[in-house]
Length: 416
Image (cartoon, rainbow, N blue to C red):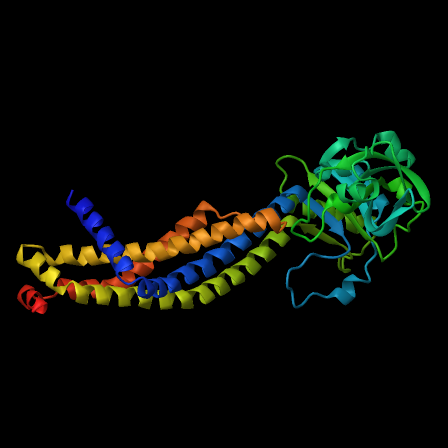
């Protein structure tokens, strides 16, 4: 009961300090508000980006390895691109060899990507991403369809003129009309639409399947050179349940070296990548940005801390006589200390709450009108309130200690 009374009185004194001099209090708490806003807004933006990024990476598959020409790297200063560009592209036949020889593979797929214009009814969609995919591509990659279906085995092997098309292409070329069964023109050929991708929006890598057209690779190879260095080709390999990526990587390395007839002393002329490379790279980037956010916000929090300390020193000065009366009636030093500390924490929390409120309103507006989903997580709310409370505790410690050490007789004389 004593502590509840202490908290109630501290809250009342804090409200009195706010209402007694609104401008002074506003300017003093502004530093806390700006500091919390700076730190938590940065964390909120990059947490939201990270959530979407990890979702995109999960769709690539944590147990899927990508065999290709280029090794993935994030900020590697020693990236020998001049060597990698001389490597041959992976080939469809190499995927077939992996399917035959591998004992650890659950499924393997191949894709090659390029860009082309698409036409329908005289309307052109420019620079669509054209993907030629093998039949088992959907076994190693997530294919989210809103309507329609994936290729049948006969369509894949026979190289039929069928396609799965992204929502952005459909909306620009056909509007709200039913697209299934309609034909689009690519490579000068009419191609039937048999499937529609679910609308995705731009993903964390700057693109999405909204601009994709996926074709059977045996159809696409009639119009594009699969060995061209201007294309992007990869073999995607998914390991069996319980097989580690390391074991699968070792087996794939042996198969690819055997298929390409590389001597033991010759270096690999291919790369085997996995999604953890992307995750680790972005973890480093987010870590640096978080530090920058704390440094920028730290200056505002420092200013806000001095503002809280200023309010508390003024509050001690104005209530010196009251402190003397409390101590003459038996109030202990610890009680006076706690009373002012609670008041400082309340004031700092108020500044932090205003900062969090501004961030929340910003996330609502950006999500609704900015085309990007921002989420103010519970973790960041707790972090913001905790930082505010700690700033209040530190800022109020010396003024509270000063108040608790006042001599009751000298304090009461301050009224005269």
